[in-house]
Amino acid sequence: MDRIQLDYTHILADSIGAPHGLDEQSLMALAAPSMAALAAVQARRTTDLRWLDLPHQDEMLDEIVAYAASVRGQFENVVVLGIGGSALGPRALHTALNSPYHDSQPPADLPRLHVLDNVDPDWIGEFLAHVDPHTCLFNVISKSGSTAETMSQFLIFQKVLIEALGQEEHKRHVVVTTDGSHGVLRPIVEEEGYASFVVPEGVGGRFSVLSPVGLLSAALVGIDIRGLAAGAADMDARCKQAPFEENPALVYAAIQWLMQSEGDKNIAVTFAYSQRLRDLADWYAQLLAESIGKRLSRDGQEVFVGPTPVRAVGVTDQHSQVQLYAEGPADKWFTFLSVENSDHTITIPKAYSDRDALAYLGGRTLNDLFEAEREGTRIALTEAGRPSVDVIFPKVNAATVGQYLYMMELAVAVMGEHYGVDAFDQPGVEAGKIAAYALMGRSGFEERRQEIEASSGTTAKRI
Ligand code: PA5
Image (cartoon, rainbow, N blue to C red; front, top):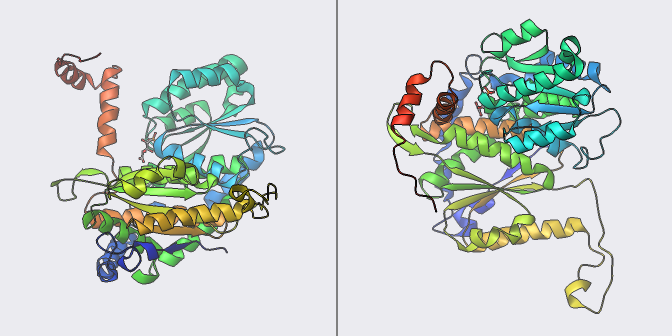
């Protein structure tokens, strides 16, 4: 199996100099606390952190593969209704592992994938106007079943389906991924007789990409989900017990912690040098932000911690963000996602050999240029004293993507130990959800509505 690697050469003072580089001793001083953090996380593997074990759930994989095979060729569109952890994984898998032209020119028998993770009426309205419900399989994904965005979409599309297809036939067009026993959706699944998959206990939204949340839509659009699981299992084996200096998840987590706590680098930029990996950077942004951005420490002290994730795409953002990254405030560190071997090799034609500005390109490949641009950016950042690491993908395939997903999930869980916060809750998101319920008149939230109304006396300043 191709294995991803973490290269942290350019985070070290030896490469980028002081004061922004890490001295290797301070990194190695985190070996013992990191091993303790890993043990604390692994101790919860069979209780509340069961996402750690998802790569080994063969029965779950068999069920998903069997369902995908059973509906093969029946639908032109798979539509994910979900948000946050219930949407970013499905999208990232599709863009990483299918052709960028999959949705405009779907391969025979495979549907397009739409991930509708917004309730913007213009977006949903255009979808309703352009996509025929007869051609769609809706995968409603919500662990809680109470997320207003997903549930409002479910109600809208259920009505459209029933009107278009009738009560009985509409059921064939819905598959629900939700909690096995709790929440609002499970009883609806049973009442309606929808096909369904379970978000297992101990698998939170942003740690659910390797559960049916991410894998069902992936299998439906033709992705090798066994390959993803095998990659994740390989990373599990690499990181479960390995010593700090051989453990990419632990070293990555330690670097994140040191970059912020000692280096004042409050911004963590994932710089994907791969069009296909750009949505993995989006997926990671949520994982990091929701897990580590916290007001309270685990012992209840106000700490207001957390790195701010930023996504950038090479080479595109060289012409947009890199000026800031190289010369602006030294408040960022960088993770390059680099791909060693592309699927395509494209040669730049030789022409205008008398013009220096073009002649050097002729006969070289886009692959050479892409690599030179990435290295050029790194060299510029390194010379400017801006720390970076590389996650190197020998190739982008199911196995390497599975490894990356698992490595980052484990790294973030371990970061929770370094930062001293609960990486698995999201009270700030819940607060916004509750305010929205109150504003929408949900019963049980009347008091909150009154509080909001009472505090909305501020005179608007609008020009
Ligand atoms: O990571 C999380 O827990 C959140 O981002 C959730 O995935 C998101 O809020 C959606 O929740 P649910 O799946 O319950 O609809």
